[in-house]
Structure formats: structure tokens, C-alpha cells
Amino acid sequence: MVTSEERMRILNLLQEGKITAEEASRLLTALTQTSKTGPTNSRPAASGRTPRQLRVRVTDMKTDRTKVNVTIPMGLVNMGLKMGARFVPNDVDVDVEEIKEAIASGQMGKLVDAENHEDGERVEVWVE
Image (cartoon, rainbow, N blue to C red; front, side, top):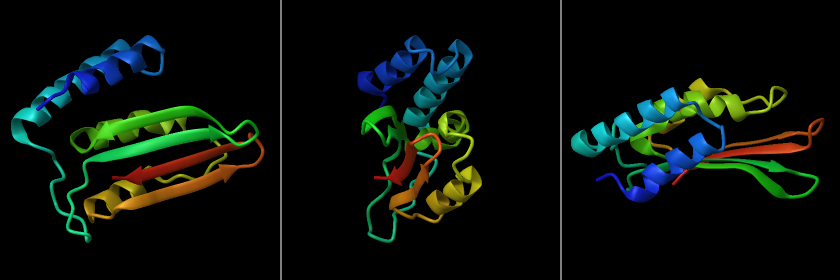
């Protein structure tokens, strides 16, 4: 079931200029379709729990302030990873395909914890 909170997250990303209107439309459409068909990755993880969401956080290491904090429902992960890849600093080694493979295998917990000392940013990606 699509919650109003999930819709508001997408609309807030649009309002903040982090995604385009076209991307917001695709996310809302995918969210609606996911609620009808169920998540695309419903395989239980090794812990026996089914992954529910992917979280991406980019933090400024100098100020310890969060620059980006995005939570993506598992049904939207493939599209969300494509969009989220735009926020990863260029000098941080993050392999989106590797993240997709880890998710497909049912891995839970932190998948990425990378730091860019030049720009002072830290990127974390995990599945909950």
C-alpha cells in the first residue's frame, strides 16, 4: 500500500530540485504499481527478515551535517539507485551494480561506507 509519507518524500525531492518532474512522475507511477504487485525483491534476507528499504546518506565530515538522506522503498530500488548515483561524489568509489547484486542476494545492513577526504564527504548505503 502506498503511504502518503512515501508520496511526500518524492514530492519533497522534487521541490528541493534533487529530482526532475519526469523522475518524480516515474517514481510515483512505480510506487503505485509496486503497491499493486508487491515489492520486486521480496526474498527474505539471511536473517529471515525481508528487506523493506534502502537508505542513502551523504554527510559532510567537517561539520557532521547530513547533506543527503534518502530512504527508498525496496520496490523502487532499481530506479532509486540510478537517481541516487547522481548524488555520490565523483571521487568516492561506489559501484551501483555491486549494490544491486548485494540487494538481490538478500544482504542486509550496511553495503557501502566510503569517504572522500578531498571533499570531506562520507557516503553510506544500507538495507533495512
